[in-house]
Amino acid sequence: MTSQIKYLLTEADIPKFWYNIVADLPTPPPPVLHPGTGQPIGPEDLAPLFPMAIIQQEVSIEREIEIPGPVRDVLKQWRPSPLYRARRLEQSLDTPARIYYKYEGISPAGSHKPNTAVAQAFYNSEAGVRCITTETGAGQWGSALALAGSLFGLDIEVFMVKVSYEQKPYRRAFMETFGATCIASPSNTTEAGRTILEENPDSTGSLGIAISEAVESAAQREDTKYALGSVLNHVLLHQTIIGQEALKQFELADDYPDIVIGCTGGGSNFAGIAFPFLGRRLRGEQDVQIVAVEPANCPTLTKGRYAYDFGDTAKLTPLVKMHTLGSGFVPPGFHAGGLRYHGMAPLVSQLAESGAINPRSYSQAECFEAGVRFAKAEGIIPAPEANHAVKAAIDEAIACQRDGVAKAILFNLCGHGHFDMQAYTDYFAGQLHDETYDESEVAMALAGLPSV
Image 1 (tube, one colour):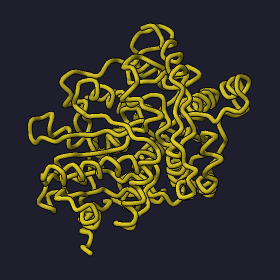
Image 2 (image 1 turned 90 degrees about the vertical axis):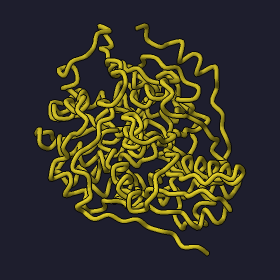
Image 3 (image 1 turned 45 degrees about the vertical axis):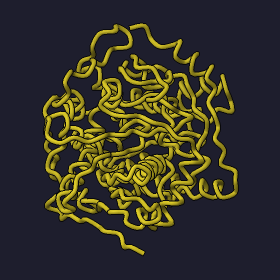
């Protein structure tokens, strides 16, 4: 059996700057609008939710933004993360393709999420914030922020989508170990949650609902801010250390990817791996194909509308232009909880709308089949979210075998599945069904899009 090849960097190779793709876009991003006036918002509109340093990053057009020393010091605990050449997977597929994966599961939280959680906790701490509220789907983001909050002396309040809260008790225990409070959403602790429960007492929840609860909770307290684990520009910015490290590691490999793949829910891990490579393409330096993979039962990029919409269900957030299924849409309770979001990052949506990236969707069962195949070859059990990227990489490798083309394929293995073994248990028991969403619900949600 052929051995894996691992490409390692040193602490000195951890990026000193985040990469901001806005500087290389052919057209500027559409403005964020105030939900009441319909006019572009200013920093003062975001100040109740975010510290000013975060707001400045959100609207920045600078290509490089310096990473603070205290943030880099924490990141050194697990970064740079390894890049693997998946030789055993290549052999099992009998493909001429060269398959690489950037492995983010080595972080203390087991995913890519601490890359931005540490940065956001640092900036909030510097601003004198005492508590941060947030939402989480599968629990990876909540775990990451709980960890980061403990490092910087912050209280963390996490609204966890109810279906994941019930499916993943060990994620809750992880958050609580680091001192965070974890609340099943929708809950009775906020007006937004109570409204949802009155309409549907058995609601399984959604990221849009959990965002509403977290935003409402933060807005009611002077010493509290809100943090988001995906979607917004500053979050995608913080994740670009993944792709920047990968660029250096491909120099060690004396190779360069023809295809870069990431799973997409809100867009953060996808942007983290893809944006530095896409930036090179936008600057005319080196071509690459970019593939964004999403679940077929929450197909935001492939079936959603590119329009202004609220980022949350209760319509408390500003309006952003993005691919959306409608803020009122609640996807089925499938296991890839981190991908159960009605919208998509505005920057990712803009790139998809322009044709700069190629979206595709897969069903739940075929993604788990790919994840098991990968685990048997490479010895790592992927998170349910990452299985979507694994599936796309395998499909591309099989196409190379069919066409006799030897492409280099890179995907982001954004987290391990050690907290998600119930999902694998259900898969092996034949209980992992491909639940379909109700298209009439999407139509109803899209009919309610704000008029802008």
